Amino acid sequence: MSTHRSAAAAAPNELDAETVGFLMEASRLSAEELRSLYAQFKASQPGGRTSDFMNYVSKSQSSSAQLRKKAHQFFDLFDRNKDRSISRDEVLSIMHSVFLTAKDRGVQLNRQPEDVCDEFFSKLDVDGNCEISEEEFVQGVLSEPDLLKILQNPEVMNTLSS
Image (cartoon, rainbow, N blue to C red; front, side, top):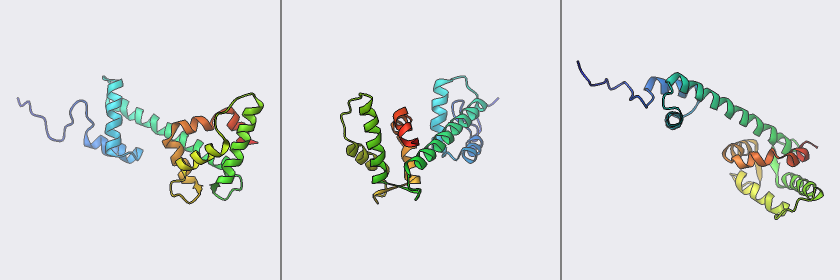
């Protein structure tokens, strides 16, 4: 009896090519991203099966889709004049309102609205055209988890929705 495995078979802690191909198509993740996720999955669930991993990918994709949807909703709130881009004036107006609300509640802030606006633009205005497109905003929120936390702060939410 041979102890050699076929070249197509994957090691127990690796995904086989067929599964990677299927998941790439279904999730739009790269092979590298899937293998990295699989390593994380196996580290947290050493006994986890491939079908468990497929469910794990599905849940993470659902979570990503929800974050993307929230980012689009926040973009719409920032885009006060509905021209499908966010200007420095729109961000500054919101920052002044947030800072005023915080001050009214007795919260001492160490920064100025202009500084926060500048940082916002330095992180999100990727092409440097002094406007933040919807795609720049969404990608920025997805890549900066702290930004989403800030946006979900109740004081910010109240300012955006008023």
